Image (cartoon, rainbow, N blue to C red):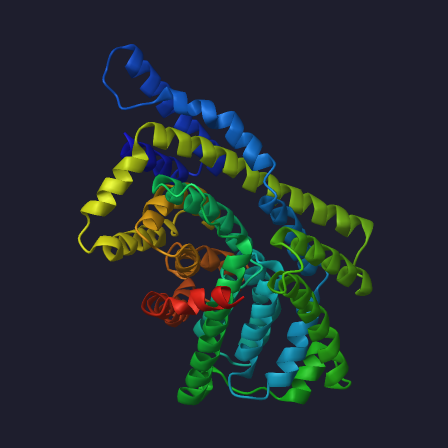
Length: 463
C-alpha cells in the first residue's frame, strides 16, 4: 500500500493536477480506503490513530520560525528582479569582459552567480538572463547552443548558492529527519542541523561549479574561437547605451548587489543573525536598492507583494499536503518498508545512497524541487541518516542532484523557462545540446562530493 500510495501521487502529478491538492487528496483517499478495509475486517497494516497528529503538524508548520525566511527571501528576489539591478550589472560586466574570447559568456556566469545568490529562484534567474543576455550573445555570433547552455546552467545556480530558498526548505526538512533518526536510535538529546549549516556547506561546491563553468567556457573559446568570439568594446558600449567611462557603471552595478549578499551571508556566517533574521536584512536591503534606483512605485510594490504572497501560499499549501501525505504513508508502515528495502540493497549505505540519488534525479524530470523536498526527503532522509550519513553532506548532495535534473533534457525545468524567452530562430535541439557539457560538470561535482565529503562538511565544521 505505501508503494501504491507513492506511485498514485506521481501519476496524479503527471496528469497536471495542483501539487498540494494532489498530495492531500490522494493521502485522504488512501486513508479512507484503509479505514474502510479495517471496518470490513480486512487485515490491513493501517494505523488510523496516526492521523490524530495532523493538527499538531499544522500548528508546527504555521509557527515554524525557519519557514518565515521563505516569504522574505522571495520578496528580496522579486524586488531585485523588478528593480533591474541585474540589467545594470550585466551591462557593466559585458563591457568589462566582452573584448575577451568567451568574455560575454563569463559575464553571464558571474552575473548569474550574483543574481542566484540574490534571488535564490531558478526560474527568475533563467528568464532574466535569457531576456537580457541572449540577444547580445547571438548578435555577437556566439554559438546558439553555447549561449543557451551557459544561461540555463547559470540559472540553476540558484539551487545551490546561498541564500537559496531550496536550501531553506531542505534545511528545515533535514533538521526534522535528523532528529527523528536520532530518536529512533535511542539518542534522547539529539543534535540539530540548521539552514545556516547548509548555507555554509553549499558555499565551496557552489563556487567550484562557477569556476568549472568559466574554465569550460574558456576552453571552448580557445578550441573553437568562432563559437565565442570577442566583442568590440566601443561598439558594445554604443549598443548598450553607455558611452561614458566604464568604472561608474561597474561601481553602480556591482557594489549594491555584492553589499546585499555580504550583509545577508555575512550576518549568518558571523553569527550575528539566524537565516530567518538575515532574510529580513535581505528584504530590507532589496527595498532600499529599489528606492535608490528610483524604480519603486505603488504599482510595482503591489505587483511585488502579490507575487510574494502567491509563492509563499503555494509553498505552505504544499507543506500542509505533504504533512498529510507523510502521516498516511507512515500509517501504512511505509517508513519500515523503506528501511527494510535499504537494508536489503547490496552495498549497504553506499548502495542505498546511490538508489536515492537516482530516484531523486529521475523525479526531478517531473516534479519541482519543492515537491521532492517535502515528499521524498522525509521518507528516505531518516533511514539514510540512521545508516550514518552526515546530514549536511546529504543535503548538499540532494541540492546538486536537483540542480542537475533541472537541466536534463527533455523535461528539465530550466529548459522550459529559457525556451519561453528564446527567439524561434534558436531550435530546441540547440538548447538541449548546449546543456549537456554543463550536466557532465554537475555530475562531476556530485562525484567529487561523494569521494571528498569534506567539500561540503569542512567549512561548517570550522565555523
